[in-house]
Image 1 (cartoon, one colour):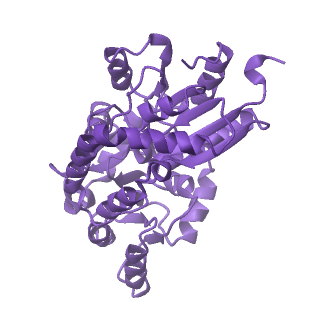
Image 2: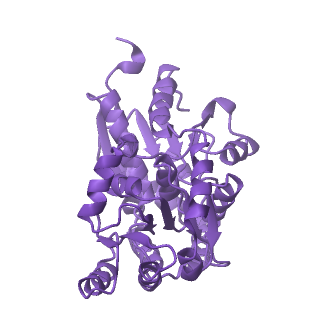
Length: 378
């Protein structure tokens, strides 16, 4: 049997601050399981191993309450303390690896911890798959030359080269990892049936509001109301409430009272690919995961990017979207509700001209290639 095809043990490390890290890990695992059904795969919450679950909980609450201007302060404190806490973190990871069988490959989907991860288990091949468009001081990914880094943008590739990473350890993917289910397309007839099922008009432009798993309650509630009240160009609205149960209940009360027209209120669900295909444009914050999912679904973007309220790692996303004319950046609910069908159609043409994103499939092939090249670890 080819050495690259023999049974392996692979550990995937994700974080719980936001949902993007785990979503990327699950996307990778889906393709990995199809390619190597007999391999052993383990999922581990790196935040839990590091003792940082409380910090992730604070981060998620900040997002839910639309207090993102506090995030830079959180990152400043984290980066300042990291040199002091690294010895303790290293010890925690070393102790964790003692409790599980030794892996062949460790795949990290988290920033901050990659040097510690590499040092804690030197016998494994280390892959770091960036879930951001770039490395930054606020969200550091490129931390050890023993990492094999899989990046989705030219900017991240250039950063790795500037930081002295060997060229054969820098793998350029065609984008961020997106779950394979986003590539399964419904027919136009099926999509019309789904729109009718949710009370949406077949010919109206459909806005999908998607602010991650912890959307800001007050802002989203205001935005849904403004979209529902549009009169010059009526619009459908699909509002993804994620894990924000307060937001969902508020909107459902208004919906039952007849205050929201052509609106679907959706809680936490695994049907996001379906709703994106039902939509003409995705509205949200410049999270690399949601942006990438929308683009795979051929949806342009309306991104909320108020000055001082965008995290450092999200600025790179905003720049990329604007440079590629894949969307527009706005600062208020009023601006979002005023976007016209003509604007959306122009952006859609730009999205369709982008290079297709096949990163999730390329990442597994890259891992196979690294293993087949001699298990380069140290």
